[in-house]
Length: 221
Image (cartoon, rainbow, N blue to C red; front, side):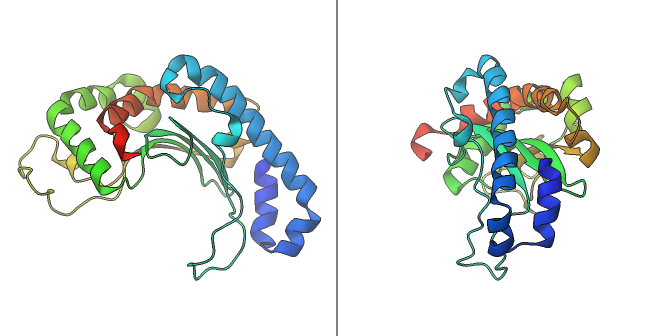
């Protein structure tokens, strides 16, 4: 059974009784994700040495949802994924993300999602000082072809304090997340060359990840 097949069934049977009956199948698809993660990690260490010697288990997420403060009480996530970042998935550094979800909701992405205030301030300062470097990264042919040459994320309606409204990089400075996203159809996820697609995306993301991490102070972790 593929990961998407399992997640499709989980969407229709999101309860502990069903999961208990299908625990072995879950272990199989989780192992498939761990194997994919290991393959990607081996290649990415040479491309971005800053990720260090992460293990696959440092990069994948639990399928159990935290329902303590949620109105939605279904116990399991209906997606799976991996996040490769310096120090592991729980750190605040920019990183590489693969999201797997049925119904053509999968994607390859990278960057920083909703950083805390101190990190957000540092990234904006880096853009203010070195926006030309970011512009060169986003306008590179490979980046434009794979990620559309732009950053995505929720944005302020007005410029953040201390920045001029006519700043040449105002659209980036207004962002509250800094993400590049490449959507994946279910057919692409289930192809044998998925790892090649992921590696191509992550390799293309590397200059952006390095730009963002250069801005993030180590004492913010």
